[in-house]
Amino acid sequence: MNKLKIHKDDMIEVIAGKDKGKRGSIVRVFKQKRCVIVSDINIIKKTLKRQNKQDSGRIADIEASLHISNVAIVCKKCGHTRVKYKTSGGLKGRVCRKCGDIV
Image (tube, rainbow, N blue to C red; front, side):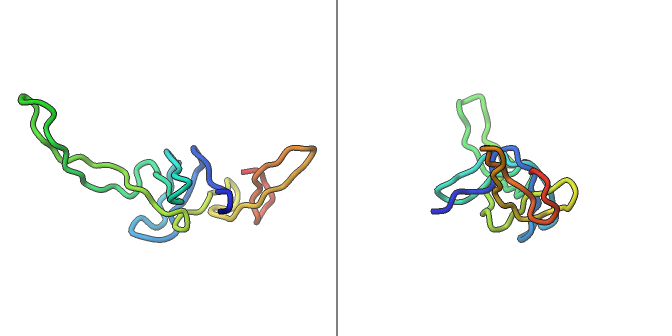
């Protein structure tokens, strides 16, 4: 399995699905499932049971996961782009394929 090029706190743009065009930062990455959770994107409703007799059950809005094929990393200059790895001076970093800036 290839190493993921998406990390926590990256700025991404959704490129497919109901939230296409929206941008947000990654909250959590699931490497085995190849999914990410993005802040304020792909919101679903979930019913929660009551926790005690005084509490009532409720419907909560939570963020569901997105497959990594439906998101793209955002470069500050270019917009959404692909990423490659580049080594310079013994340090390995992610670089934008379009403009060459460090992501």
